[in-house]
Image (cartoon, rainbow, N blue to C red; front, side, top):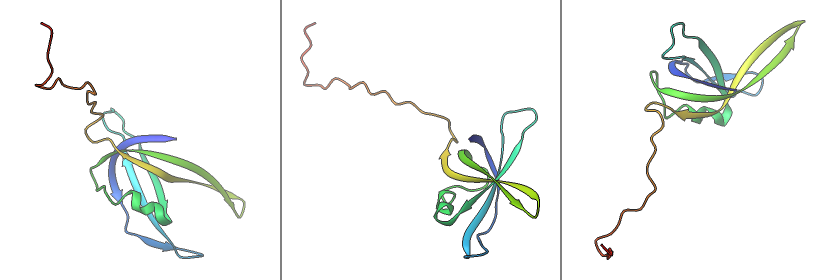
Length: 108
């Protein structure tokens, strides 16, 4: 699943039970819509390095996995990011057409 939006919150790193794994929670909000939705997701372990190049206000595309866990007869959903791509300026396409050098001899 993918979600595009602006980062509105990045939590401080915390350690979670049982094995003291590092965790960061991030919230992103859709942009350019009349009724924007927000989404919260977690980064665990070495995946927390994915958010380090970004700050609040960055426009990103996040690839997520969803999980459902049962505890005492209740079900809980969680989203975990596995990829974050900068979308701040949109896609910029660069032409791959080579330029003619000054040494080229043209027949006309």
